[in-house]
Length: 88
Image (cartoon, rainbow, N blue to C red; front, side):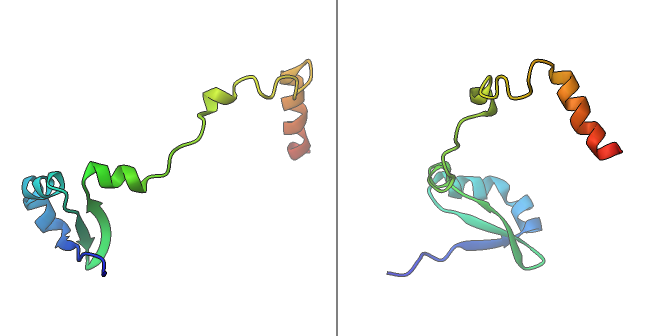
């Protein structure tokens, strides 16, 4: 079974036909937008995008406190020392 052929439109045409392209996406059809003949973006149904985007891992906030004690008792001094290594 071959992959479905995606409709392709130039960027200017996409700008002029955005409402119709959004309706196509709402109906489950993806459209590739090109610039100078090269693909640069896609207008896709949200469900399709959610399948393609990998699930994100933990945020940086989840790591808060995980480096506790890493810099010693005087964090400001440790950072200054590290910075001074590169200045000298």
